[in-house]
Amino acid sequence: MQNRLIIPGQKIDFNEKKSSHAISSTRESVFSIKKRSKDYINFISKLEDIDVYKINGFKELTDKISNEIGPLGLASSPIGILAKCFLGAPFDVHILGLEAEIILNHYKISEPLPPSFSKARLLALHNQYSIVEVYNDKFILIDSDGNTTNIKN
Image 1: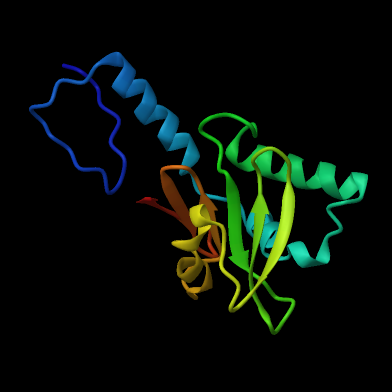
Image 2: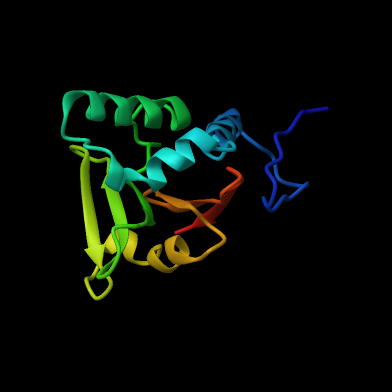
């Protein structure tokens, strides 16, 4: 009998034969959807209070993210993190871009987001979620308790 890793919300075909490659990629996705810590949620939600451009702020930022979701720069890493912005009007969300370099941008309500993030804007503004991690192929929605929901992009 073969052991299988079952992820909540995953569709399961019990007649399907799994290759070892499929099993390892499933294990990899479990790491990316683990529950997030309160410290991480608070840190990302309050980015407007942190000067990420100072050396300590930048190091603290990259350390917090890496400790929570794994090393940055891997194919399985998020391309960015989207959250509500608390700077006040006219801003509604901020994006912490994690691709080539880490960039923090605050967006006005009427301002379009980059294409990879545009579908996630309403999710980030929804009261149920604190943060949306944006990947090339999915969004991971994180509520205030750190619970995660994986949505295919």
